[in-house]
Image 1 (tube, one colour):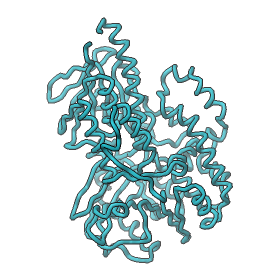
Image 2: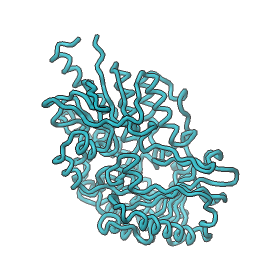
Image 3: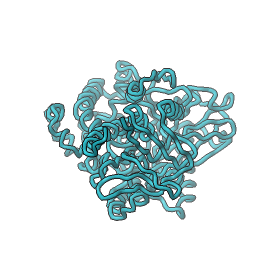
Image 4: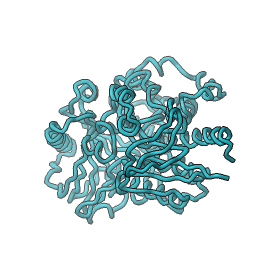
Length: 502
């Protein structure tokens, strides 16, 4: 039997997952990566004895990772270990209140009542609803291609429709939360989940109310070695399955012949393949690899998700009051999002997120010190001329926020600093304009406007990663890779029959 060839452009989480699934299905898989490492946004910064995960810092839905190893016939424990974290996040509010979100359900509900005076019944009802929506509508939407007729005829599709309610489509996420909770703090906590795909809770549809399910119902996890260990595990698995990697090797162009794929151009050489999967940003895929300026221009006109500025601070002091994940909320959340998406500017009182992996593994910082991954959301598309000014302003406001909340000036404790900004994200991860999640979800139709996992015009060409369906974040990227592998398998079966190959 002839072995089909598949080429993957980019070795992000979705790209490697697609490569593993295709290799497990019998394909000869080659990955071309422009960087010197695998992982995409999952990368590592090491400086002055400190280690920082430079990309995603939250690990949820480990079952998606487990399923990938199972398909490959391997035990995940041979590659990576992880454990559930006791608390999902510690929240600091502008009014001085502090709230710890616990992984254990009853403890979480009790904390809402005792720390925020939010009735436990409200939170329980909300989380139960989120679980139901995620297992029905979410399951259909996130695990299937939305642009294929087979989805519309599947029985689960009609079951999901039966629980669809008008508020999910016509209320904003914030409007739904104002109806669900009695306290401003609870509303702000749940509004924050819109940022998980770079969106605005005051504009995004209430359908996003299912997002908290994966964190507050299923819990969060920590992988030994940090998030970068996930990228390492996938790379090792891919290599074991026979996937070939070429680093520092950008693809120059995707070759099409009419309505079918031919392969790619690498170092001026045509490399032929029956299947091509682009894990690159969908905008750059069209503009640079397909030379399709028209489609690229359409993508560019869509509202992009937010970007970020990250300060990787090595702190010479430990802060016992902080945990693995910490949020310092803005005192005016609505104004913050108006600045991000309307004024295209950083608000003077931004919400600050701090991840400290040395709370879990002391070896990530020198003895008695901590590694702070300090992030604020900023508009995507920041120009080079505004870069230094934006970073300086963000740094000033972050330090001011922390000084006011922690009642201590943390700046003297910073012994090393590395900055990640929108330009860094575009240059190093290929994210157009530094938009972390591609397009935003700030309209009722935006979820359906996200580019599908296949090319409508070119048979055998597929797309995966955070800028296409079903979206950004590691679990969704893994789901997208599965969709691509399944679609490629169906296409290849038809191709083999049509060509007489067997």
